[in-house]
Image (cartoon, rainbow, N blue to C red; front, side):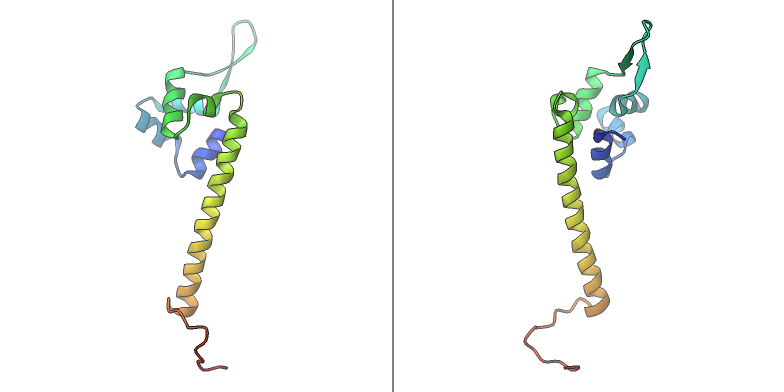
Length: 119
């Protein structure tokens, strides 16, 4: 899985979601996002690229073409992945806290300086 795929997954999207939103076919969108390679007639390897699909995918993710596919895209995408992970972890921690409050406190907040049984 490449960095662009990881970012898409962390954002809760699928390639099918993106393809339908940008109005391009699933398979061409998938090949562009995955960076599918093919063998040229001369034997060298090429990467499947359709500029119109690449631009649309980048725009759908709130990125520029260079951020998604440029020479420094790996660094940029890694920073965005870290940011998504932190946001996800923060949301999960908040949800866990709420679950524990529901389980052990019935969502009531107990005043810290109030003396209540079992002391």
